[in-house]
Length: 441
Image (tube, rainbow, N blue to C red; front, side, top):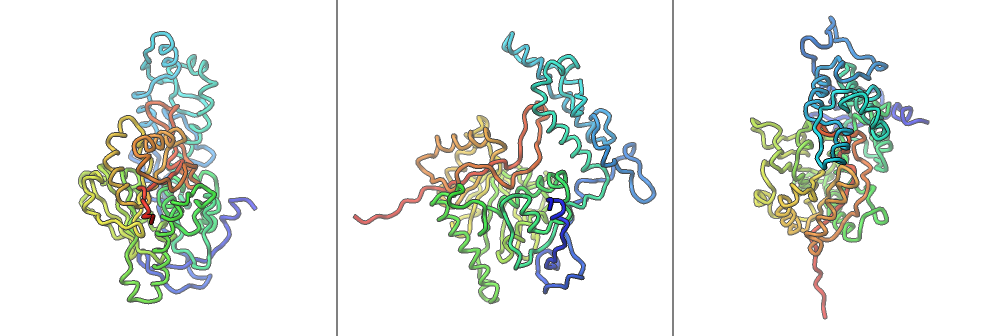
C-alpha cells in the first residue's frame, strides 16, 4: 500500500470544543473536525492578476504549475524574480573574476534557466558554461518553483485541514514524517508536494513534540546520551504526573505546567498561534506555556499582545529582547518542567557567535535541557564546534548531533545566491550545563 493510499484510510478521532476541551467520543458517523490553515497561503489576488469568476477565481491547473518567474501569472513570483535579478550575481562571472583578479563580479543574473525558471546567470552563454554545476541545484529549484505556484494557484489546499485531538488508544509513531502523518490521521496529505507544504509549517511544533514525547525517536543507542536520558526522564516524569492528575480535579488544578522556551525566535514566532495545537495534541494531559524570546519574536512593530491563550492547556507568550537581559522574568528554573529550543541559531556564525555567548552562559546555569537545530550539516557542525570551543568544559551533551526526522522537506534558497540553500531544522543536537555529583571519600 502506498503512502498516498494509507493517508486516505478513514480514522475516527475525538472532537474538541473551543480549542482544547475534550468531548465524549463520538460515533463514526459523526462529523469530523479539522484545524484549517488553507487561507494562509491563498490570499485573494490583486487586481490585474488572476481573473476572478462569479463563484471562485480561476486557478492554475496542476499540470501547469511551472512558469519562468518573469512570465508567472502570480505577481509575488514575478516580484521574487526581480529581487533575485537586483540582488543576485552570475556564478560564472564570479568564478572567472575570482580566479583572475581575486575579486568577485556583481553582474546581475538576467537570464532565466529554461529548466528551473529562476534567473540564474547573466547570459545564455554563461548558463551553458556552468550547466554541470547548476544541474546540482536545478531540480530542487524547479521543485521550489512548482511548489510556490501551487500554494498560490487558487486550489483548495486540503492538506492544511489538520486533525484535532488524538484518540487515547491510537499511538503516534515518530519514526518519520510518513509514519507520523499516518498515525496522526492527516488523511488529506496525499502527495509528496502536499507533504512538503505541511512539513514546512509543522517542523517547529513537531520537532518539539517528538523530543519530549515518551515514544521519541531519540533514544539510547540512537543519539541520546546517558546524561540526556536523565534530563528527559525528569521532563517525562512531570508529563506522566499530568496524565495521572487528570482523574482528580484537585491534583489537576495544582499541576505545574511545562515551560518551553524558544530563544532567538523568528519564523517560529510568526506562525499562526493555533498551529501549536498540534504540539498540545501530542501531550494532551499537560498544560504548556511556550515562550518566544528574542529581538524578532514579535511579528510586527505594532503588536500589542504579549500572551495568547490558544486553548485551556496551551498559552503562547512573546518577549522581545535577549534572554540574558530578561532572564529574571522567568526565574527560577526547574529541570523537571523547563526545556529550551534554539531553532537554527547560528551559534558558530562569525556575526552571531559573540552575541550568543551571554545567553549560553545563562542557559548552562539553569541545568535544564537545551536542544538546537541547524540548516544543514555544515551549519550544525559550525555551531557544535563553537559550543565545544567556548563552553566544552561547562556542559554535558544530551543528544549527539544527527539528522532530524522532522526537518522541513522543502529547500529554501538565498536571494543573493541561489547556490546557497537551507532546510529548516535539518539537524538536531542537545546539551545542558554540567552537573557535579557529590562523592564521599
